[in-house]
Image (cartoon, rainbow, N blue to C red; front, side, top):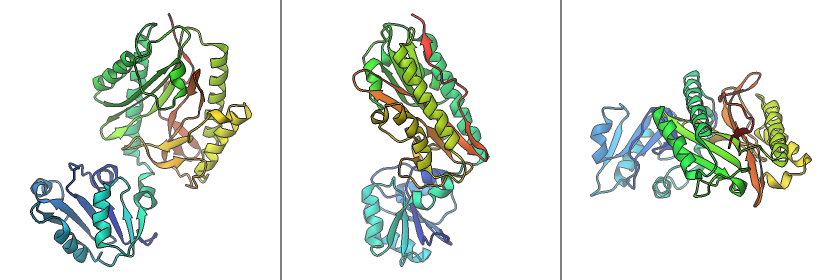
Length: 351
């Protein structure tokens, strides 16, 4: 905060608050906000949650009642923290709009930043304990993918495959967060979710899955083929694989995130498919599936050791099929370490 001249940080229930203070309060219309100055902390808390919170934290609590509202408690909190005259304010970008409005009402003259511009710089660099949890989650996702592959067959519904994946996560003690199972032309929609389509001989299948365990997430994408893959699928898969490798080679400490995106995009463009790669190369992952850093064509974030992010190029041919390959990596001094242990080859489902 000092190095960025931030006077006050305001956290809401969610990823940042859990990461920083191990607090996961119930989130609803009642403002529950943690204010951090450069020297002090204060918690604006609904009265009905204050008593339970005292067992979890020693931070000063400023409780407010439904009958009177939070304004008076917030005024007192800001006075005690010396934050009433804050010039630079960093808000949790996941905060409810009405709660952000409450804070801005009492600090109308503060220049506003968002958390990814301040605390996010710390959260992007994972500790060894965080790495171990992310690795564990990646292996759980690997097992779910293998279980789905083992049971897939012609005539099975996409939703049935998705259920196998969800059950596998649950069996491992994790919670399934998403299960994209996109067969045939459905694979041309990057965020298609499993529907009522059934697997047919010759279908390519995009499988993008992720779960959460012990507060951390997984995310990975692989390709399957129902029966022998077509020559065109093999060709496009090879181009996407080459793009993965180019991004891996480009991702080094000190490199701008946009350069990793450019490395993968150039491979796909040179192969004639540039118009069909329509999303960024990657996003950070940790307590949330999408968090900083974001690896886009314009991102100037400088990559550092310990950052965890996806590398996921894709080619999407409308009304035909799509191919995406995704790895979650942690950046080491000599480049990315892949968390998954599952090969990126096309998995052929025998008829």
